[in-house]
Image (cartoon, rainbow, N blue to C red; front, side, top):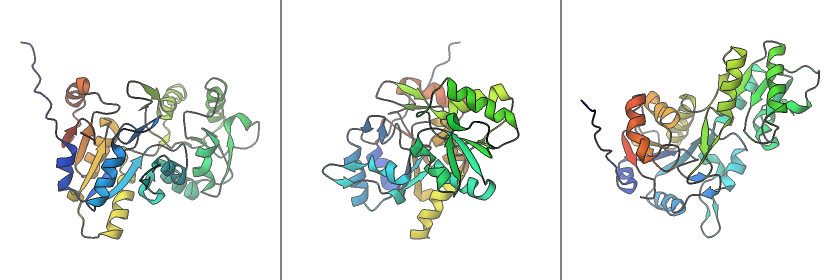
Length: 286
């Protein structure tokens, strides 16, 4: 007998958000893509502010500092929509790890701006392409841009083979929306390729790990201690990071179909992964 699928139950974001006091947004595919803020998002963020909702961005984007990430949300008419203290990047968790566990020199893959998260730990950062034969105490995979995918990936591979140095991945994402139709490989995909060749596991930060949610939870409770986990909604476009992380941390979640997960594939993806969002919306503007 042919299996029949139940239809998706699509909700309006503007209606369901009324039941929550704090909103954790993913960035890419929810609020923005590689081209900038998605249409209508600025107005939604302003409305949430008017409704006294606590808003934070939980992002696996470690390509730039929180200050620079916030600049993407500066609107020419409305001004800053998201401030640096509202951004919780997986890079912040990378900084905390490096500050506690590593000293000396850390080699990195990524743009120079992404090395902010190494330097913020008080550690010297150099691109993989400049390592030479000097002692390297850790390798950090920060971003998918700013290096030669052939020469520098091979250099990183052989650097990790030199000795038992920790390899830190600041962005666990496999892909991110580059525009409304296409996706691009993220540094998490490159990390998994290197893991397969080396036969070892790296240290990952970012969703679905619950550390980011704990970080955000602490920030919310510092302002409004009476808020419970049931008062917080995680809004994301990826089941395996945003929704799984929210499920593991114990907060409600909403899957939006404006990024990595498309409406045509959503039900199959949910049933195949058994990762269940509490809500499904086409986007935060519908």
